[in-house]
Image 1 (cartoon, rainbow, N blue to C red):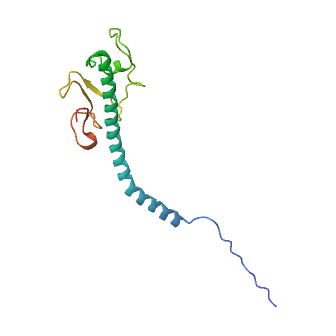
Image 2: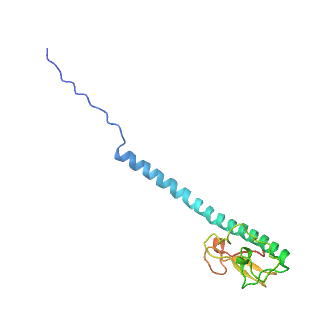
Image 3: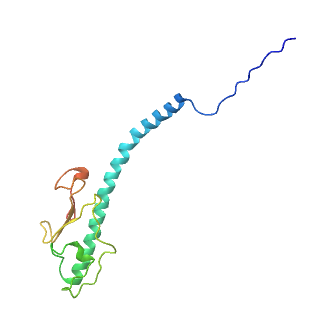
Length: 144
């Protein structure tokens, strides 16, 4: 009787290079489909945030006017909503709980009194930071 040699092959745990490449390709395709939609929503969210902040700043400006009988001048700017000037006796602020925010693109909000569209104009130039534009580059304004 001859003894036969039995060779046992051990199965290695893990993934082959082909399997890893297939998974990477699938993830790449999924991200290519999802990423543009996600980034489009980020731009819209920033526009909505700017509109909400402009409304809140408008409310603070109205409160300032109720106390002082006028809106801040262009030179006084929006910082007067947080810091009491020496010449206003009826100032009952601060009218904002925190410092005046920047717009969602880290630019200061623009304030003009007297305004071209009302008693004051309060606006952000949008993503591009210049007047005009479309979509996320469009100016966000208090008078619309």
